[in-house]
Image 1: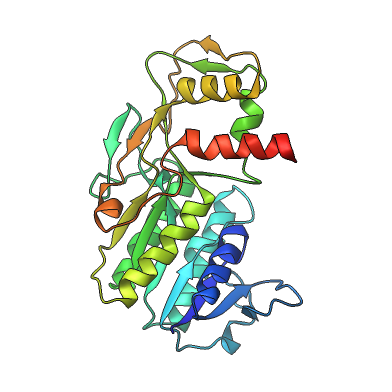
Image 2: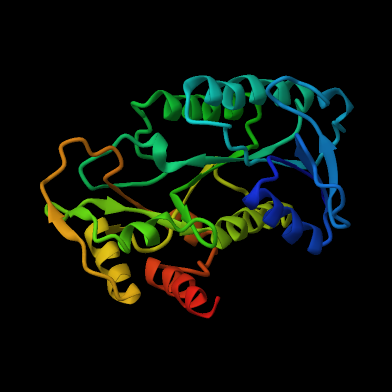
Length: 280
């Protein structure tokens, strides 16, 4: 049994906390406004941006997870989490290794290139630069920590692409505009898998790219969704000149470690979501 801290108990954090608690670990969830009761998780009420409540936080965790979502999309929102908040945690827990949830948004490639953990990560947007800076600062401060870069997360409650596909949207068809995704359950499973590999004595790399096996053109994905939803197909639009995320994510490092995706491609994951809609 390990003593674990999860900073950021939103949807993913809570799902992970329950999985790890069920595996027998002692889990503390740090949240600004904890729920009144959850018999599987011990909560700490604290705010990493202001520091409120952090002095009362235990400092002897075996492992911590950083799964925090900024309050908004502004630069100040991101600085509050990825600069101020992270710095406070590193000061409070100077010897604790972390699993840091990051994003494939740290890659600036826009021409459909393949990217992996060794590809240049030099983002243009300030929000992504702040995430990248947090990655670098964390590894410098805690070398045993691990960065996990998730691509676009989808699943129950994260169905924006389904709503878009139902509206016969204008989509770039040629040249292909590649998109990458990972089901939210695989996000939870990846984090639990990495923790258990570490606890079993397996040496982990400092970074893992977590995206499913099927980077696919947006045209292909939306066309398939529209067909399954019995909606009008998308309309082929003009080539976009302002692509910001046109790349293909390679997950080889994660799979070589032994991870098997529950949803290896968008068809498996979205078929389940669509079927659930029909029975809901």
